[in-house]
Length: 592
Image (cartoon, rainbow, N blue to C red; front, side):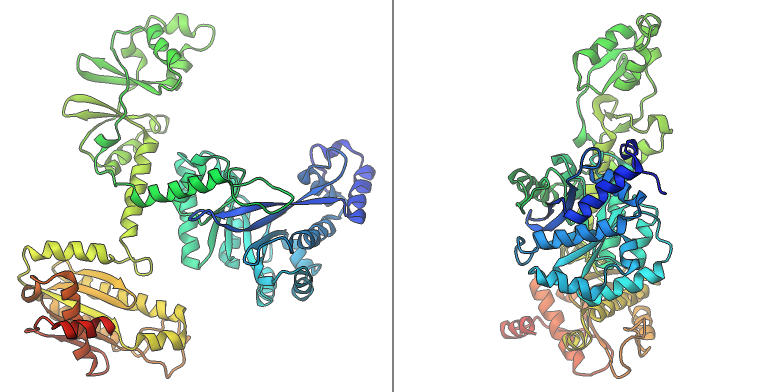
């Protein structure tokens, strides 16, 4: 028989079985619901059903009760009964657009106890549609047969149900489950929330999962959010939804996210949008006390004892930085029976460790690299910032990492999420720089012919795939150029290219080489053979149009593109003498 939980083990096996059977037969279970809120707006996505057995201690704990049920070989029955109770009690209480998240073990799915058709009937009976029910796959043990589970999940999806992988990043198979089952939601395990504000490892994992989720069309739910700081961190890292005590506690009836949480969400998103990118470490400096190299250890200890927020003291030999003393190290040295007698009179020069110094003009990325290249025991020590030879202060490592992250977010905000190419803001910036010396440069406008028709006929997924493949053709053609080629993604299927006259013909030839392949836009070969797609690329010398504003420039290139499209097929034409369009033709260009 499997072992009981640590507390339930104090009961006899017979008593545990009786208690489990009593709850099963009488339905003695309370169903609570905890809100899951959007980390963009604070609006409710849905609620997770949480079951609480009405049993004598220690079996009133869900974990202990489920362990006892497993030991009695009744886990599947308990799991199924609680699922049915959750649907019956919460189905009619949720608003029509809200989702109900219900835990479900792989064993329950594989055993056949829960079938798509029967569960579909049950949820509809209680005013729910399958499309509003999310089955959270929880791991009671490692999943051994993903092929079988994938077929079962597919059958439930056909019936309309959604799926989530629970506790991502914790279970033995959770990451594999994400890849194999392609869930609609990925719920991050609550251990990732602990110290997420500054723990670099946890932040990297969350960011990686969020990036992967976007690529496969899943949405990320961060569990275990208990503080404002944790919520802010998950907003920064790109999680879509949040769950935890800070947003709302489990309650018998559905309740909105707390007012405090909604305010924190709006503030965190505003900070994320508006946060200026820090370009120099000097902007992150914190002033910290200094002591001379001769200061005795006892007096050094007093600095930290008087100020519980003091993290570090810089040791100076004259005006030169001799080292740094951190709170953790000084308390370690002074602790114990002999700590103070041995170190109380020693000078600070002997108690400090070498400081990592950076100039105030250094970028946060450069400073962060210097911090993380140190030996492991010193990686979390603050860096000492110098203005020339003078001490400016210190900067904490987690502040450096936040600045680097903000820089990356700001950079990503200016890139098209589908192609990863610069968007309109970066296009405008590049053209402004090019205006200073436009000689020898050609400006090209490229797009897909009759793309709306293609998108409507083949679907958005194939449309996005075609746009992405076209962007790769442009990028690959640019890689062989002698001068830097700029490629920007205006939006939709429209691209702007700035290419030097020396590279114009090789660029054209490289594009034609790939575009001449009949199925370049269908890399997986899934579209019917009669589907075709061509492109039009038109351009002119930038020197002739460099004086025009951005909108006029777009209009003149659009007019050139229309001339090219009349030819049919893949076209790449350069117009040496394009004239600025009239107001009427600009209106036509905007309409087109």
